Image (cartoon, rainbow, N blue to C red):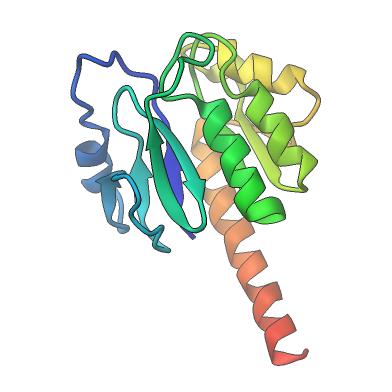
Length: 169
């Protein structure tokens, strides 16, 4: 499974998220590069001031218009992964102001993907989790420390189910 992350960040600042996550992840973490193939078990971070999209198994970076006053936009990422990967997508909204991600959550749900939102009551900034939850398209509202283990369990379950189908069980 590949992980794609969008963080709202002032476009004049260099992102240190990849470096920070690398210290705590067993998976390789890197800033996404335009047109690179998406590799399993890799974490890709959107660079500042670039929309992160996917198409044909590759990363696409765009500097198209701001969406909800932001670039990168979570909505655009979720819409592109929903179109590319359908029901296999797990979309997660964490703390943040505004409502970027709410439209994307709808897109993920529309294709049968799974949606998770950080509990707005526990988020440092509840705007984005609240807006996503208000769509009615959220499968799980979880405390921050429950999100990672829940995703790991989902992926493990799906992998086991897929192996059974391939093995004919």
